[in-house]
Each structure stands twice: as structure tokens, then as C-alpha cells.
Image 1 (cartoon, helix red, strand yellow):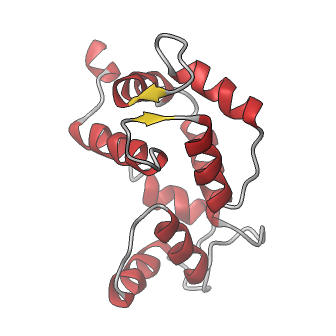
Image 2 (cartoon, rainbow, N blue to C red; image 1 turned 90 degrees about the horizontal axis):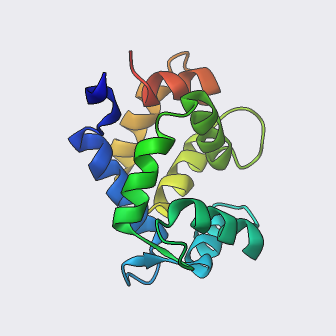
Length: 150
């Protein structure tokens, strides 16, 4: 049972990538300013208080910022929480027009905001895999199927 609490190498790598995306000025720490900048780029306005509350949850020593080690420790506990909620929040971040579907354009823009730049062919391939019913949009169910393969 204890083995389930250890993150896989892929989960660690993904968490490090998220930390890098959050650490806008590459100083090895994520601050209120870093979080607000990232969230603004994703189309969400968050208050300084919300950012400070998040930092308090993540920071192991109550600092005004957190480092990669703090973030990985927090991710270890956070990943055990309701993954459906996490996936839904991620889906909403991509679904800019709030129509319940992620368009190819929304997928491209969301990935670019995270620093992932794909060729048109790669983007088409990714979208094609996710849009299983070929309706031109990725539904939440399709998103979950891709993000959480069984």
C-alpha cells in the first residue's frame, strides 16, 4: 500500500514541468506574482489573497513563495485527492468559450500558454486522438479518457 503513495518518474517529471511553467522568472521559487501571471494567461483573474492561500498550502515552511521541493511534496498529497475535480478544473482552463468542448484552437492556445509548441501535424494528431467521436471538439469525457487512460 505504501508504494501507491510514491509518485512515478513520469508524475515527478510532469510536476517539475508544471513548476517550471509557474516559475515565470526562473528564480527557483514561485511567488504571488508568478501565480497571478500564469493564471491571467490562462484567462483567470485571481486575487493576491487566493495566491497567498495557495502558497501557504504548498510552502513547507510558511514562506511567501515555494520551491520545487515544496511543490513536489504538495503534489504527492494533492494527487491522492479527487482526480475528477482536478481534471474538470483543467478542462475548464482549456474551454475558453465555456461551451463544454475544447476546440482545436483552444487546445493549441492552452498548450502554448503552458510553453508547449507543437507543429500543425502534431496538434492535428493530438486533437484527432482526443476527439474520438469526430464532432470537432473534445468533450470532458473524451478529455478524461486521454488524460486518465485505464
